[in-house]
Every structure is written in C-alpha cells, then in structure tokens.
Image 1 (tube, rainbow, N blue to C red):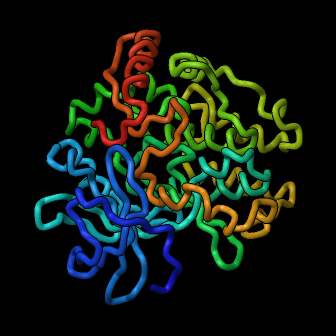
Image 2 (cartoon, helix red, strand yellow):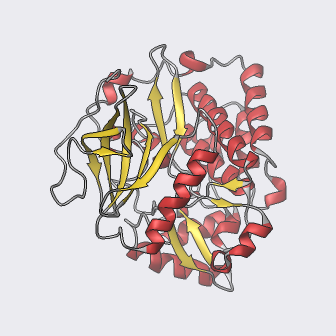
Length: 370
C-alpha cells in the first residue's frame, strides 16, 4: 500500500467477509478497522493501484432488512453523485456472494471532529477554516438539490495532509434526501418523519416540516458554535430540553463564552442559528463568502497555518478516531447524538418534544433506523 495502514484487527468470524477475500474483483480485504452495534468498517486494498480503501459492511443481523439495504443503496448513489474534496467519496457498491451489501469508500484516516472537540474548542482560525470547508461540502450537496440532514461533529472526519493542512470530510450520507418538492412527494412517509440528531437539528426538522439546504446550514452553525466555545448552543439535561431551547432560539451569547471571538464572526454564526429559515444564510456559498470576509477583515491564517495550534496528526493515532473513518460506528457518543433517529411527526411542538424524548431514550445507539 502507498499509505500506512490504520490500526487493523482480526475480522469477526461471524462476518460474511474474510481476510484475503476480493470484493468487486479488485478490493482485497486486509482486516477490520472497527465495529459497532449496526455495522463494520474493514480495511481493503485496491489491487490494481495498490492504495487503501475502507469497506462499510452491514451487520449480518440487519443485512436482510429492506429498510437498511435501502439506506445503503441511497448512500452509494448519493455518495457517488456529490463531488467535493470535503465529502468522503463512494468508490464502489455491491454485495458479497451470499447477498450482504457493502460500500467501498475512500479511507479518511484521521479523528472525527467529535474526538477533537472532546479536548476543547478549536483555535478561532481553525474553526473558521473548518466552517469554510464544510460550507464548500454543502455547496456540492446544494448543486445536486440534496440535504444531508445530519451535519454534526461525529459526521466530520479530519485528515492531516503531509503539508500540514487539515481537510475536513463530511461523511455518512445514509439519511440524505433530495430537497425538491417533487422528490418529497414520491415518498409520503418522509413527510411524517423527523430525522436527525437533537443537538444539531434545525427547528423545522424538529417539527417534521419541509426542509432544504438551509436546515443543513443551521446544523453547520450549531457545529461552528460548538467548535468555537466547546459546547453546543442548546445544552440541556434531556433531548426535550435541548429541542425546546432550539425551537425558541435560547442560547448563551457566543462572545460571553469566548470573548476573543470577533464580533463579526459571532454575527455570522448567530445568523445561521436563526429560528426562522428566511433569516438564515440562504445558501452554502453565501455562508462561505461571509466566513471568507471575516478571514480577510481580521487577517486570519488559512490552510496549514490555521491549524498550527492543534497537536500534530501523530498525537491522534492512539485515540479511537481511526476506528470511525466513515462515520459508521456508534462508539462513545453524546447521549443525544442518535444516528439517523426517526420519530413520528406530531401536531404541536410540545408533543413533538415529548415524543422525541421517548424515542431518543430508546434509540440512542441507533444508526440505520428508517
């Protein structure tokens, strides 16, 4: 292989894939990277070109579920359609000889943003650079009329490049949906469900209302607030408390938590956190340009220089970060970070909150529920 392997462990004998097995006629399985309650990530090698890749494999207990298989198919199709340096690429999709679906994706070898934020907030310049990169990822989603629906720190992986740059990759497209009204009409059930992670969901997602790329921009603004302060804007003991604050726009002033954040940057984040969709940034490009103006106004460093205050790439190698290169596994997550949580729509906001509290408590480790 051209690159060092991440930490590889033996493959569970119960899995339908073995070391040395070749998938799609060119990806040779080398070992396991990690596993969770709903799936597995394997390391493989592209034989003709000799480079490492990651293979996402559904847990055998779920491989026969049509809902889970549909999510896998959707992630493959959408992952191939979205073209961005800041989105993990899907390279191949298929099934093992006994019918278990798998995805082959680029190996993003680095910690998740969740892992990094557990050590504290980012340097301000790094947070701004991160925001610009993720807004660029959402530009690619918007170009395809797609909504990611689950933008959050555990779905962002940071890859250190040899020149010191840190490339942010948005992962896990399994709950992505087309944002057009025509596509929503194709599946009536979508209108009756709320999908996302409570800490990062836009108010319209909480209410089960129609949503578009501006909902992702809200989630990205929550992520930026947390990257700058070390805590999400709408903290609470229960999911219901969190969602209640989000619905009413209740949060501590960003600069009260970190005074050195420029006022212009705080205003950019605050605009993205507006409860009313029409008051937010209206496109990812608009948000990216606003962050670029903040950079220029305050002469902030970009690229490698923006991340110099963070530990070097090697300091993350002993964490669990490389165990979750594709955002597939549950791991140690925030109790409100349910993966693709789905709940039934309710008539009023407070009934929505009560329903979410019950469902979130029951499905805190859920990844593939549809």
